[in-house]
Image (cartoon, rainbow, N blue to C red):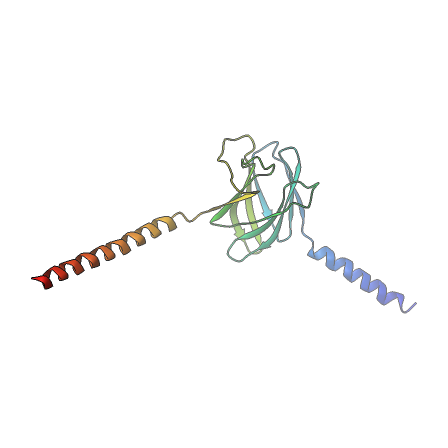
Amino acid sequence: MKMKKPILIFIFVILFFNLVLAGRSLNIDFSTNDLQLVMLLEKDRIEFDLVNGTHTIIADEIKENGDVDLDIFPYYETQDQVAYATVGPEKLINIDLNKDHKSDLRVSFYGKSENKTVLLFENLENKNQEIITGEVVREVNGNKFIPYVIIIFLLIISLIIFFFIKKRKFLMKKRKK
């Protein structure tokens, strides 16, 4: 009888520990509204029906800077397909659930507090949108200034090279005289 009590306590601790680590399961219903705000904790699971199937997204990790790593299962019935993406203050993703190269769902960052984050899920199924060229997830980077910085940098380098060559030609002409 003395041996049963520690075994029962051990089993209780293991069961309780697993429950603590598990995330919540949340359902999104796009039938009433195409925009859904969802507050997530780490390991929470979002399930929704869209494009003739049930789909699942898991908030794998919530980082300090607001980024959320997502595991995306396009069709819940076939769990062998998974895509990974990150949503954050400067990143949103468009998801093609049925691989027709059109965005079906947009997930974007809405806000963060402590260990919770709020994501905005937008149903794009019946809207006109751009074609996706990748597999399932297309990440859109929020920083639009990088191409301009690169162009300005290249122009400055080109001007420096141009003036250097021009000065060199001028000096060579001066030497010939």
